[in-house]
Structures are given as C-alpha cells and as structure tokens.
Length: 582
Picture 1 (cartoon, one colour):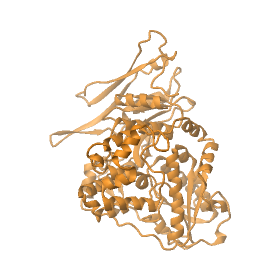
Picture 2 (cartoon, one colour; picture 1 turned 180 degrees about the vertical axis):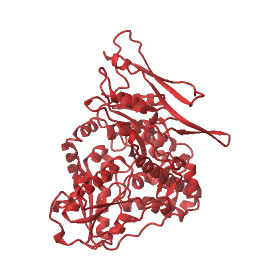
Picture 3 (spheres, helix red, strand yellow; picture 1 turned 180 degrees about the horizontal axis):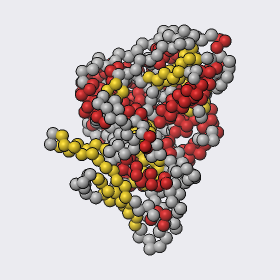
Picture 4 (cartoon, helix red, strand yellow; picture 1 turned 90 degrees about the vertical axis):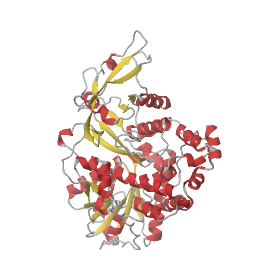
C-alpha cells in the first residue's frame, strides 16, 4: 500500500538524493533526486520525470567569529518590526451569557483564564466540549481512552469545584458550527476559547471567528495563559524568531501565578435556550461511550476512510498512559516533585529490569506488541545506572507531555510554580532540567503561534504551514494542495534528512502541485521530525525509532490515506521503515 518508490512492473526502485557543497554565492544547497534501478526494463517514466532540483537557501551572518545559519523563510513571511515580545492581551469582560468552549489543550478548571473571566457573566455561563470526528480519527486506542477519561474528569471537576456546573458534550465533524449554534440558541454574547497552535484547534477557532463575523452577534475571546504576562506572544520581526533574542527578552521577568478555580459559575436563565443545535439538546449532558465515539468516526463521511486505514494497521503499545485527567496529572506532578525522576519513572514504567524484560520479549503482559521506540527506551533503562542513564528532564517530559501539552489537564504555569518550590527528591539538577523543559515548551508554543500568524498574500497559493501535536509536542509541517481541477491523486509524504527541515521540499511541492499532462497535480506533505526545524526539541533520548514512529503517526493521523513516502538521507531510511510498517 505504501512504498518509498514504485516501478511500472512492480520492480524495486532505489532513490538517491545527493547534496552539493555549500556555494560561495548565496550558500545554496542543491539537492537532486536521482532515480536508478538494477532492472533493465520497466522503469516508470512518470517517476523519471521527477528529476527536479530543489533548493533550501540559508541566511549566513557572522557573529562572534562563527557562522550563524538561519533557515530562509521560504513558506511565509511577516512584516519586519523591532519588537520581540508582546504582552498578553487582557480578556474582555462578558456582556451577557458566556460560553466556555473546552478543547484538547485546556481540559481543566485550575488556571483557566477563560473560565475565570466567564464567571463574571451577568447572565450565566455555559461550558461545552465537542468531540471532533477529525481528531477522533487521529487517535490510537490508547489515546482515545486518555481523551475520554480526561473529558470525564473535567465533567466531574466542574460539578465538584464550580458549584455543580455541567458540561455540555456532543460529537460533530464541524465543532465550530456546533458551538456557534449553541451561542445563538442561548443568546450568548461571548465565547471563550483557548488559542492553541495545533492544526485542528487553530482551524476551528478561525472558522468560529468567520461564523461569528457573519452573524455579528457573538464575540470570540481567545486566551493563551503564557508563563509571563509580558511575554504573551512574539513580535512580527524576524529577530523575534531567534531563541537568543527571546531569552534576552524574558530575562528577569517573573512567572505569572496560576489562577484559582471560580467557586461558582452563574447559571443562565432556563428561558435562554431554545433547544436549537447539538449542544442545546438535553442529550448533550451525557458523556458518550468509547463505542459511540468509534462508531461516529466510522460513520462520518470525511473520516471513514481514515478510520478504516488505522484499523488495518497493526497496533503497537508505546510508553504512554491510557488514563488522564486533572487529578491524575496533579498526582503525577506531585510524584515527580516529591520523589525525583528515578522513583517517578519506576512508578510509571516499572523497575528498569522488569520493563526491559517485558520489552525484550516483544509483547506486554496483555499480549499487545511493543513498539521499537518503547523497546529502545527500556533497553537504555536496563543499563547499570537504570533510569539515571536517561537524558536530564526525560522522565518529566515523557511522563507528563500529553497531560500538560496535548490535553492541558495542567497548565505550564501550574507545573512551573510547583517545580519552583519543590525539592524533587533532593535532586536539584532534575528540578532544573524539568524547568528548562517547561521553558522550552513555552518557547515552541509562542514560536508556532507567531509563525501561524505571519501570513503573506504573495504566498496564498503556496505551501500552508501547520502544527500537529505528537504526544503533546508541536511538530511543524506543510501541506501543498494541488492546483484547481487536479484531484484524486495519491499524496506524497516527504521526510527530510539530518540537520534539515520540511522547507527543503517547498519548491518541489509547488512544482508538483501544478502538475503536467503526464503527472497531474499531487497533494504534498512534509514535516519537521521531532528535534528538527521548528518542531519541538524535548529532553529525550533520540533514536531512529522515535523518528520512525513520528512519521508513522503523521501518516495515519494527519495524511490519513494511502500515500507515497519519499525521503532524503536519513529520511530515506525512515520512509522505508514507514512503508514496511504500513
């Protein structure tokens, strides 16, 4: 189904990508896709036609006697200004009935700016959550269970800590329209929503703004909960995307204290709802079962094919947990801050010897095959030093990334405040490494939001930058849609080489999207693998197995259909591994 390259008669094809030396003029790297085969006949002429030259230009400037390489902004560019940091905008006070739209990224009641502001609504507050079928189709069985338990936890927390408030829940392939219909039905003046850079969340907020602008009766109030109020976003200057400039800007700025939970959320008058829309129905008070969520995903026309593709791929067990929620996340944070990283890792993944033994056998106790990434992790832990052989901050990052970054059961501010005052089992180095991880997550979140907001009319038909959360970590990718009239073609997924990024394929993507008579326009995807480009660089033990799993999940979760996978350098190895897996 998936191949690195294909010949007309099914003969194997070898792809080589060569890079020339840095050129003195412009410092351009030329990459040429050369196709070769040991077969004398049957070479696919369509693939031979893709003998194109792609260029990834880099800016080079001297600084302190060293060369500083910065990727040329080939995809989107913003206006040049000198401002590096911008303060967090103050949320407007509600004017009537307020709606709080919970999503992945803010499934909590503590330190929730939208909930705290909406609590002042003069005509009551309505809380809602929409299971997006596109997001459900992306999730493995374990992550679907984690999301389900996190929403159930949010439902309980609202009832217990916010005066018996309820959470309206539904399933929809258009969450923004469902929330907008709710606002109309209850005559809500304001809807509060988290400004998350994840592709689906970002697109849904954009659609909600479009719907609200068309009706002119609902105000969309987005919030970010930054670590520092005076550093709520990055400026539009090119310097703002330089981590060194960012570090200088935040030096000496204090963290923002987490917000308290509103003790009571005012209830809107019963006459406010006209029972129109999915979220206004009485059935929206009940949490759907996992079976109902799976059935809804399979029945939805836009996600049925993706759900079928995932069901056909053998499932492997990773290191994550299938239980999530605000109390569970707080428990894990307390374990780390009280006992330190090694004891924390033992409680999550078991003793190093036992975990490694289970991984070496190729299956967990329940018989589910173990991923190569999990096997590699446990092999490291099996060393004489045990979990102490992991990268500083790795236990914290792996153990809490999904709760903190994907689901948002805890905020970064809550984690930072806890880490600042803990002893971490007497291991101050581990505490500092965890704080560094939190700071890095904040930087990459601001960087992603900055890049998404930097649109250029000249690039309207070029590759579109997006960010996808993989285990909570933000990964940048772009998608180039084919030219109008070119539909139905098999997508290409491109994997970059070492010390490179997705931008090396930008020009190739644009050329393939235009198409020719023999090669119609082709959808094109390319991502920055974890640790490269503008994707996050968490403190974890990197291996080829991490990148394999990353691209596999990208294919199943984002692309969601049979594709041709190609790669440059180590990306060629990853492409072959993905093709063999799927």
